[in-house]
Amino acid sequence: MRLGVFVAVGLAITVGLAFLVAPEASSEPDGLEKVAIDEGFIDGAQDHDLAGSPTADYGVRGVDDARLGTGLAGVLGIGVTFLVAGGLVLLVRHRGGGAPPPPDAPAAPPASA
Image 1 (cartoon, rainbow, N blue to C red):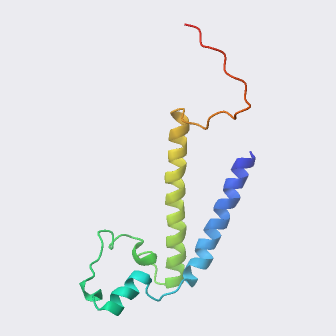
Image 2: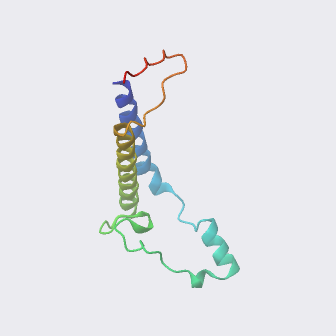
Image 3: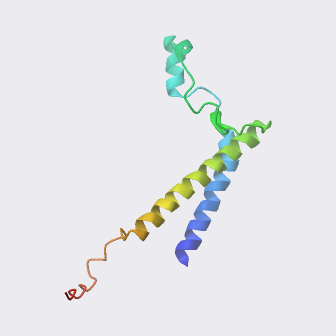
């Protein structure tokens, strides 16, 4: 049960940080964009294939408040990441790919034929 509490608390902290801190991120260009501006080839930039997605550009389409949209995009990103990672963990556990026994664990008895 401790693992569940740990995951729940960690998830709550992460969601809180994403919702409250993400809107405070700098609106200045990132490093690559800054170099493209400084070197004069920013005009050749093209949108990527997911530029029209519902959470493109650190916001949520349809949400007019930029701070709220950024926070919601962060929370949605965390949710998708958590679901994908959790699904992979469950898949690995189901397939028997769990962690090996500790080195001091007694050896399993030999299987009978």
